[in-house]
Image (cartoon, rainbow, N blue to C red; front, side, top):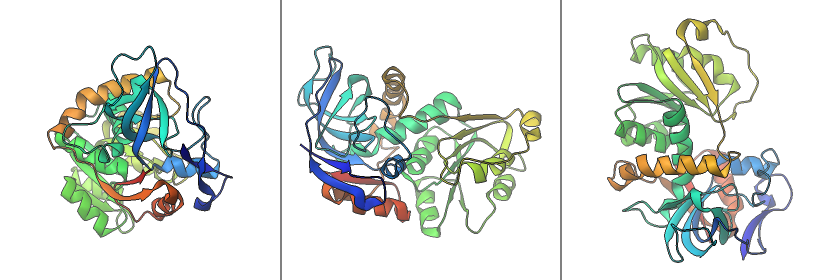
Length: 325
């Protein structure tokens, strides 16, 4: 089979489509013939050498996919050859075939094409596990997601609105903010021209939001704390702005704030299976009902993975970027 190989750590040009061995499946795994995979920021970090795959995972990038089951391990009961599925991966998505633990496989949501289904597993599992399972965001609360036009952001807006949450977003252009508004965001803040803390306070009568999902890290840490309501929860899933910061912790004590952080890729297959099960139970019905739609900006062939990475790093896109064999 063919796969996109990181030939050395560096810029997008190090990504090369090469002939490699087809992965062998274990007793609890399925082999998926790829229809599409989606890019994630983590892929660009892996390409640069700063986000190595977990032990035992595929060395090829790609954290989600859609496709058709081609083989099943002897312990697999739910899936059979020919099933149309999508899956959460620990790596290996930039390839024609991928082996994945059966607990990380999902049916294609009703009404969604096999191709577009590749846009859901990583964002759905990330947002559901952090914002809902761990931070317990619930109807009637206020939620701020940074990078509202990203894959994570466009999904988070839709599922939060569906569940009765007031949604705040930040983004860096009026075009992106308008897109977020069309998806259902209530308050759209241009972080380049507005102070998001002041805007959040203004829109909430000085109280702040209940949950924040942040991928910026250090530079936003204090400002995020300042934007939270009493009993507010900050969840950090990335450090695009840097990992180091100084903060005044007094506000955390006074307002009973919670700060959490977690990645998805390094979790155990058992833990991922729990998240995937919750996503199928809670998110898939919303997709089937048309309340959450895939947001796909552009598709590239696997051979143009470098160009796809260039687009992602330019931040010109809205939603997800797909690669197709």
